[in-house]
Length: 509
Image (cartoon, rainbow, N blue to C red; front, side, top):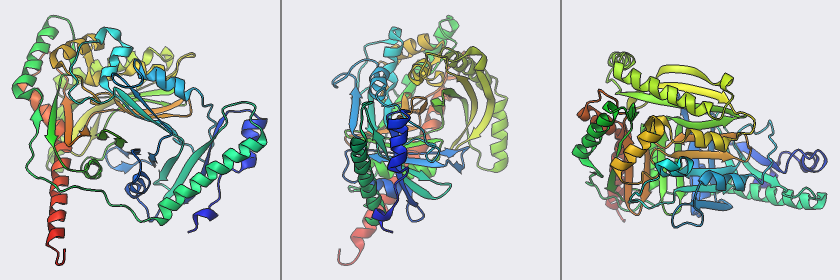
């Protein structure tokens, strides 16, 4: 296949009509398309990210077993926004992102009805202090990463699993209303050249190997609080519940573990052992984020807001019958149902703050959703944004999710911060995308997520504490939630260790 023979769509004449004549906007996607039957999303990622400091891949498995239609892959962002102490920007990360994306008046095309570019990144849990100033507390920062980081990308690879094709998408961006046809023609030809150059990389170049250093087995994880410390969190929060300060709260513990495993090899393993609605690998330069989250934080599609509440967890059964019995036990658990209903009410309130009240609905209530290692109770809450409200307002209103903070949310956050005394970082914050289109966004709660930095991998998990919570049971729940990520690291290390030993034993090597 000759990449130079690929046809760019839409043609220049359509771009001219949209931007110059009809003045519908200043940012229009343009793409080339080719079959993907000899290319996987991971292969595509490795090819384009090889020499890039910043890159990402976003994938999804729905309902535990159905691959979502699109995977999104990108590298070489034209700008990286970092916020927080020690960076160039401080304060509300949404304000900085809104200002940056406000330059784009995106025109949607039916040929590419999905994410084509914008910002991909994370917002740490600790950014709640900018949305709700009462929660600000002096906290230690053991991981020391930016409070938020966004990669601004105008070129994205869209992998379509339904039709088994790839669209390499860039954008014709004309920031001034006075753009003439000659200048637009130059912008178009530059974009098309870039598209064909990336297509050539995907079609013609060999897939690079992941640069995996020698594996060292036997590393163990260390908790930042330990079993006794976590159980003390539970005991203290139960006192707050009895005193009437809160109804529930979500403390957490973080495990750290030295590893030489390449973060992308961890992602490759995680997507096998824990396929999830939100799977992501973000190479943020100084750290890498690897996750398989089951839970939407805030999704906006054509100004309709979606929020998923997941609360109530039980392990998967070893047989189909045991799995069914455990699911029924979860559905009839008084403690789990009470916790879940509280968080559904909290989610409705969060959505209602920015949406037309008459449109706010619970579309699905306490459904059983099965994942690789656990079964959850899940609900879906939706609403339509009120006039004058934006996706950034929706994000601020819902962030952080009640399922990782508590109820009443603000008081629960304050109490947990005072117990944990450390920044959570990415954990319980958000990972996702903010489109050039101003009515589109999709973010996950950053749970079941690992952060790799300087030879250490960090895992974190928490659980909802209510009046009748049992300390040891709550500790075990956090261990269950961490099991998929711990297993992914264990199995990936063993696999690559075995591969490396076999390679050393080959004659002549």
